[in-house]
Image (cartoon, rainbow, N blue to C red; front, top):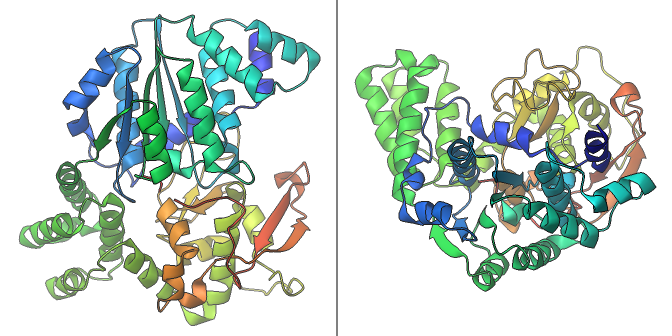
Length: 460
């Protein structure tokens, strides 16, 4: 029991909740997304070779995180009957500063490698002293624990989303390189966008490079669109029209799963599905994710823009996903003016979230250990959401767009969330929702420095 106490004391990020979210991304799609990669020579060689390194990279929205979760599931299945083998995983994520640092990765690795095994002496000493171990001690513990297994598979998703505050992404990839240099027997796999700094360190680690196959993703997209059409309000469309939707979205997606998902949701929003209306949608599809997000922002009614965009900025720059109760408190005032009085009959926070549908995601589960990560919604339903359900941006590409120079040159420039500084810091009276008196930070959109959550780059 001392082991469990020590692991709880470390307060490591739990990769299981991110794994579940990845498996449920874009709703319950058809089984087998990413299966094409499991049959590739690069993957089979990586799995068969102890100490192998593999870097999978692709552009924004090509479903890297879903592919990564498919690989994780396959590895766990293959070694499930062999206790001498251990899979460990970690998801870097733009929406939570607790999952962006090298230290967070180390804490998670220590926790996963220790689970149901034994209490490492280094961890035992730190726990007895009640002094959180520094990174070099955590590294030593990881190295010691790895030696207890015949094979360790380490899978890290979204390396490009790492790097928070002063530490930055460079500190993460430098630390990872140092650690892996001492773990030559670990089979390591990472996903990210093809950023130059990550490419450089992967070359130094002698990692095999694998670009995500756009054509294979397009096949997954076609299967997903067909599956979605058969199980939504679009099911009543005629067969020829369904085939037109499937072929058009698959052809124009250009390997971007996220883009196809957004277009399906846009078609589902039509009040009727006569052929003329659907064909009109198909003939005026946005060319990329930037244009998709621009249209979503421009579709917000003028009388709801202030509340919706203030909420969006809180969500974009919060250090962790906010509960709906926290967001309701936060968006009721602007950082440059006193909180406005509450207006009877005003739109609820669930309604504001609905206005931002497609840009945000809501998790309906309560923030308890037993429920975390369960009952997760995609970003198309908000009714009946509990006050402690959480909300965050639907995809890293959304945040990237909101703080980019590109949005300031578009018709949606009034929604730009690029901050000049922290405009205000205020303790929110959130009662039981924030028992530790946590402080939320709101960033103004009137300037051009980096947000507190660090460099922006994809969620897969």
